[in-house]
Length: 283
Image (cartoon, rainbow, N blue to C red):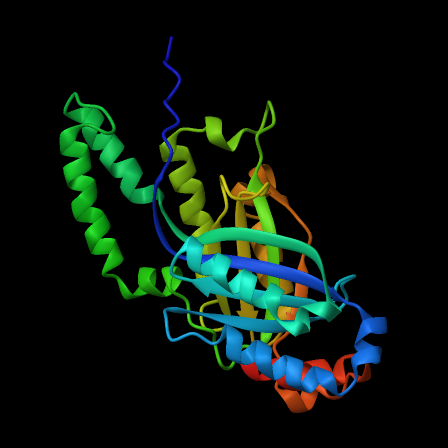
């Protein structure tokens, strides 16, 4: 009888911590404050500006029951907490009603490398995690961290020419018949390679930021997409769902879609005109 393959977890690299905060605007309070919001917005910009690694951005949501998505990237969990507290302590927070938040950290999964090292360990009669495995892993991880591609994934820039944003949480399925975590490492590596090939077809049209949330949120990953054309979100997600890894093993949460707008365009929305005239310049 053939032994069941051991389902080792993949090694991962982590970078900046991320916090996605979603708010509804208290319009009654907004109307009551009027021109005072200009000062409040300017104070929020100053407070959230940082000379340390990372950035914050405000996204006006479209077609959602909420109004505003605030994205923070920072170098540590404590720094994320500081950004969260700064926004909460600003006078601006008086017109923002929290509706959802998602804590995570940028992640690069090393499925292929982990699978190779696991096979090598078995071939020499060793086990995953023994001294030769850890030594080889450290060498491979160092090389990956020096890669420009991995650096962009772990420490993403806010793309200047891609103002449209789509954010959604997701998890891998763990049902009795479709359990991602019961697959062998080689099986998961092959599936993720195919999945990544699909994503790479959208290079230059969509910037994708993957953040890991296992142990931080109910969902396991967050996906933040940036594009110049919002239709690219539909095309990319459709293509991805026809990959076996998504068709069989992925569960998706709610999608939040919107646009990072300069102040003059925010002003065309009367219900948030005073508010966004200032916070739009955070971009």
